[in-house]
Image (cartoon, rainbow, N blue to C red):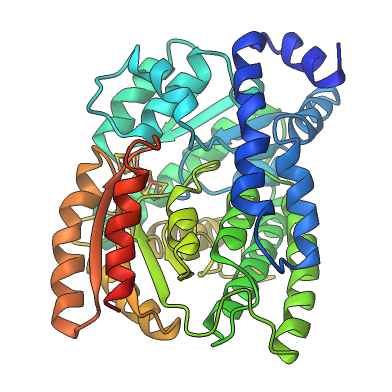
Length: 424
Ligand code: BJ8
């Protein structure tokens, strides 16, 4: 038995079923990513990481646990990574972007639930994802109704902690979020047995900010007329950033950016001249959901920005750093960043997201915007009304797409998106 199978067995996974995923994933990755021409050399790191996605990082997490450390799993970018890091824990995103996990979720949830939620429950209950076996604590949030109720079901099988996210952004909501972050700190201290000190939190803020800065630097290259890296590659880097070691990810992204700087100097682009530039907005694209990018870029267009949680929202605002800040100030700064600067459709009103889409469309010189909705996500679907209204008003071409994790609609999407690109 190879090392990975031994590890998965020990984790109590359904190894036979999981092997089915292992059989298709490398092929899918090869078709979507490795087939691209003229990729930056620096992408080798992500090829390696994704090539053994359920092996390398899970083994590191288990090693950490063997040394007495804890692993905290999260589902949403509102949950501050800095808190577990400050307590010496490792934080990992529990990203559920494959149709493989959906039927398992449907055994517990109504079919009319978004695939992201169904896949999250399926990954746990079917025992087919090592990350969902390893986490010592699962941190859910009350962003949407589907998630709220799903966490109750997940709690039957997994240790859960729920953060109650306000749905407005008034002063009292920021105060409430500060209190929630303090409650989270307490829970993490209990879990790890370590105190979250001022020094520890300050260091954690610095580590995560450095990752944000690297991702921001990476995204800046996409503003160039000649784009030196594909949208697909930036997507995979962002998806991996949710669970990779933050300091290593930062280092690897910066190394890649050095190469991209050279490419810009030498006028190297991965797209054909005149490729139409697309801004994607909407629901998150969790790993391994590469469907939209693959369709758009296979049609010869360029995805130049994602106004999404698996995009610019994850990195573009930093937590304020202040060497002299005490604990209360740092929690305040975290609350400002994690509530104030993330414009999820769960908020009402949510004009700031529409403003962001318009600003980003201009900054990244988008020829058109695709507003993407995961099937059964009522929040983003409804907010699409304002997205379209504003973009129509400004004369920025926009198209709404609703899809799921299956490939059943791939041909239809190709036709629709192809027609949209043609008219840009
Ligand atoms: S901050 S987008 S990561 S909640 S797609 S599960 S909203 S029904 S994922 Fe999200 Fe945080 Fe918001 Fe971002 Fe519900 Fe919609 Fe599904 Fe969603």
